[in-house]
Length: 193
Image 1 (cartoon, rainbow, N blue to C red):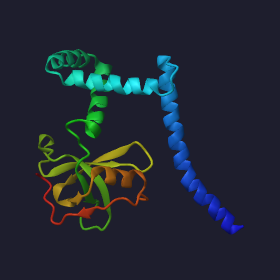
Image 2: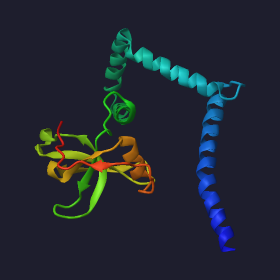
Image 3: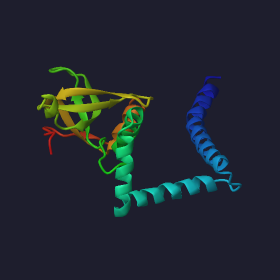
């Protein structure tokens, strides 16, 4: 009976992520198709991808930049809309924009002289504007969650991690159970480039 239970749990570990991924993809496809009223499965998803790509091309076009700039100036004058728009734009730019912010994985000594460490991402190399010239901003994503904490640390408590940012993010978000990370801590590791 114990062997059957083990096989069942192993099957569950294999099947659950696959089933969830397939279901989420199916849900996205059918929802977009339903919104656009297209009878061909997946056509709405493809149309959305093409539309977003065309918007990206348009926004990068020299003539369109002035229109985008005008739209952003208008949005920046509306109190609640400004907060929502700028926060969303900054978040997306942090992950996929030209000015990615989660591209500097580090290992942080949580307490001076202590052994406890945590993986994070440097989002600001200098906080001189706050009177903290020797400090950096480190973002700690939370495991199994789409949240995190921003903590300010002295730069000498930060060690660069020589790994892909996506690997470190997957390691953190998975609660440390992901095995694909091949990181090496650089010692000594100057933080500023």
